[in-house]
Length: 231
Image (tube, rainbow, N blue to C red; front, side, top):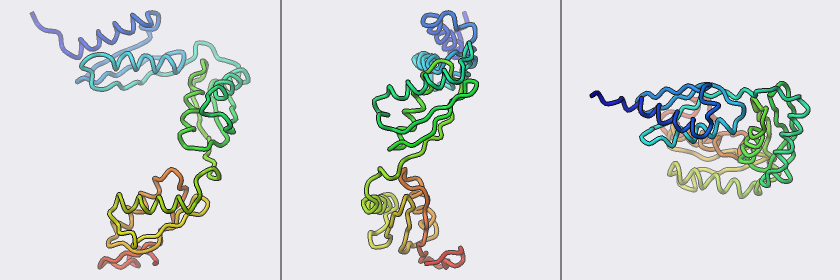
């Protein structure tokens, strides 16, 4: 007797879980497992179903990864104004988004979020709230972050400078940081061009920085002017 292939057993386990939880939706789903990775294709009515199906697939014992390629296709198209109103209500119902300035527009199931929030993570909270509404096919997240609500700029500069010291091993006297309206200016010197670039890249990834002005000098044999830099 030939033993069943492990990937085929995983496919059967995943489909069995789908049948138990959502028997009516199984016919629209396709599952392929290759070397322990499950690829799920098909369509669902809403984003909530997509997340549930991904969770069910991930619970299969022995599965290494789930690639969720399900498309959200609402069974019926909701009128633009009605959908925008439902999404607005869902956003306002989230306690974490209380006091945030968020506007919602909708066209043919595509929802656009605009306005400002006080922290980058709140952009994700708003997007998740929008996806929770039945009828949403896509979410365009155009929310900005209100930098006026961020900690005082001098404190931000100190935190960034400390970050450079911790991550790149730069001595505290080498680099100074100034922050003005979300733009960070780096001054001082570094031993190599690699550190010059690494410092700029590290600061650009900071969630409270919108732009970087890099005025660091490079002390290596390669003169800063070879790179078009000024002290």
